[in-house]
Length: 570
Image (cartoon, rainbow, N blue to C red; front, side):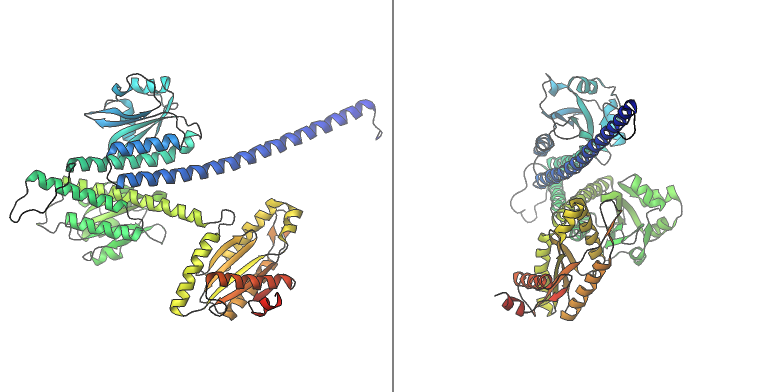
């Protein structure tokens, strides 16, 4: 056989079988790797959704003015039930030590009597670093920490940190559902929310549990205790009021208004990241802010910004000036009469800060109590901005097609209604284009569904780069896409469709491996508001009829709706 002796034939067959086994092993490894990647991505999506739900629940509990024990119970129930963490202990600062407030699934006798001292190694580390402490990496020196690690198999301790104050500690065991390290970022963010709940609850306790009822008699003077209680209740109401706002612009305006009412500064302003990269500008200001500050731009690399980023909180302008000396940023703020700067971290590792001028009354310096008030409000602002960022992300996820990155049908339908109302109000035209890929099933059958998905992604990017900024591009479903085109009449719509048809036909799409080039064509149909239809469903129907005409007349064509299309099909 093939001119080979028996030993040589056996050797060749053996080598062939070895190669075949190696190929099969590689295929199995690839399948497992792909499956693991898909599972990891799916797990991350699930964790994100769980995190958003828990965060929203905690925010509502805090905003309702509930006692801290209720907030901690909500936190405990959510992390154990939804994240699948088997054991949790929440320690809270009380009478000079950190004692257990709530624990879950702990069978250690006398756990309620075991506490952390303020000078313990674990407390010092969490206060200084402000990050999770993993017991398997850094062996704790405290007897209680070692007990939790050795006897209860606790994995990580997280700080309940507000500013520089450690209000408590949360200790977690492993999760039964997910990798605990994958969840650490989510858990730390939720623990920050828990710290804020403690701060709000503490202020509520200081103010007293009952609110004053009835009107004060004319000429009656409030006692100092009663006056302080009313003041604290007012601060608490203001903080909770900020938590309930979900519009960033409205939040910042409300925040500045509260700062003006509470602290009576000569002026106040907020600097936020500008649309121009690497700069911060005055995004919100009071009427009396000097013109120099309104126009000022501060680089993110400025030494003053670095200090504010490194050490969030309230800083006196004089201290910053003494530490940094004359610099462009410091000089502009100092020259304008700014007395305090209070920074607050923003989502995506950015920073913003509040600036205050001198006090109007007597030009006295800001007291330590007033600085504490500023820190609390800035922490509230940070948490609320963080909530807005996360809720916006949820909304984007619910409106975005995961494969192409374009908007989905849900968003398309919502925006089409809005744009029709706008077109009606201003008496303008509106174009709607619907198109799909010709014979897309053949592409899937010939090259595989992965290549089909890859083409959809490329097409999504091509369409996105081919429309105006005011146009709304959505994936309509399957291989169908649509474009809402405000202020577009019949002629402009037809020109756009023809231009897009040619652009797609001439574009070299790539297969999944990026080795082969593929060409596709699309059929397009369009309709115009109010010429062809005045209602949403009717406008979609007319565009569909035009698309059907393009496909039935040979594909790779453009059609605008004509009433004759319907008569021909009756």
